[in-house]
Amino acid sequence: MKETKVKDGSCVERVSFNAWGMEFEDKGKVKIDKDGIPFVNLTHSDSGRKRVRWNKSFKIVKCPTASKSKRK
Image (cartoon, rainbow, N blue to C red; front, side):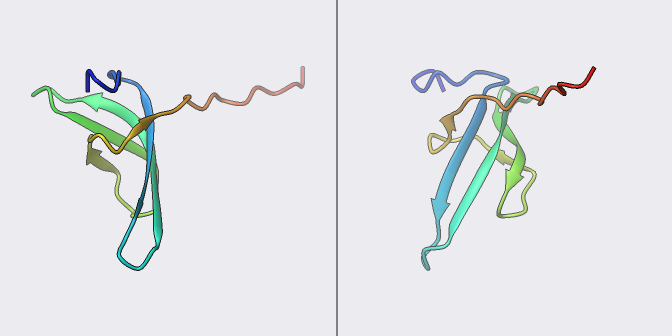
């Protein structure tokens, strides 16, 4: 994780393809568990998973921010 500069709480995403060319996209936040193993808690997953282990295929992205209402 040090070489990719990913830290606890970083937003990450990855795109992967299966043998038939179908694209799968996973997005989420990195969380380090009590044993020091990094996991990604997925906020968007085409595969239906909720949590996966972090690996080098994940790239850092800008975290989405909550949209603020312009109404007063």
